Length: 289
Ligand code: UTP
Image (cartoon, rainbow, N blue to C red; front, side):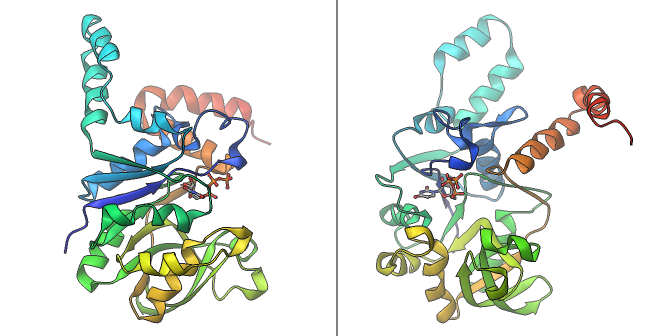
């Protein structure tokens, strides 16, 4: 078994990030020097995935264009002798095979994933949400792929969240079988704190088996009137084929302003060229009390 496909749904409207996302897709907002979606594709490629399936809508063409050649720009960089930038631009265009599918109506994440049925066919596949950033050595989708290949089961990535935030996530009820690895018994989308079966929240990393498409086809609209992926995963859990792993590394939800801005600062601080000046500016903004 190998996992060569990742489905990256990017068809949502990004309402939490308006007005920035009125005409620019949320996934194309920059985190320091790169659009958010580039970090996600790079994480997939580093985990051995070759084919990236974007589920898009009509306003998201620039996402595909970002991973395509741009000969006008390349000629200009070549004439200007900007070789490093030129190499970087070409590297991004050649990073992955890009397949683009349209979700014609935004009926929810589960519905977005269902659009990839005919491309994924009979193979297990990864899903990475276009606004969830995970950083750290071998963290993120690689962790899930390693477990899925070993256990021959589907895997979701989870993190611990405070009780007052469980209503923003899909929450699992699981049995810990190894430290940080759970057999999932049930899942509930956006529960009230008093109804949450745990504080283990699913974030945007999944490795699923193709049988989930049959579950998605039968799935009725759930919370918010949307076809929820979390609800369809109950089928895999009932058949004893769903694990959850605690994700290592740092995670930022780019749809949340505090996390998006923190991600920018985190990355910029990793760059030696900016570190000292940026730190000084931040200290000016936040003088000691
Ligand atoms: P979110 O709910 O976080 O994203 O969906 P959103 O709808 O774009 O943003 P807000 O909440 O209004 O600010 C999680 C992921 O699922 C995709 C989104 O693009 C995002 O990557 N999605 C969601 C779809 O592709 N189609 C949908 O119908 C819904």
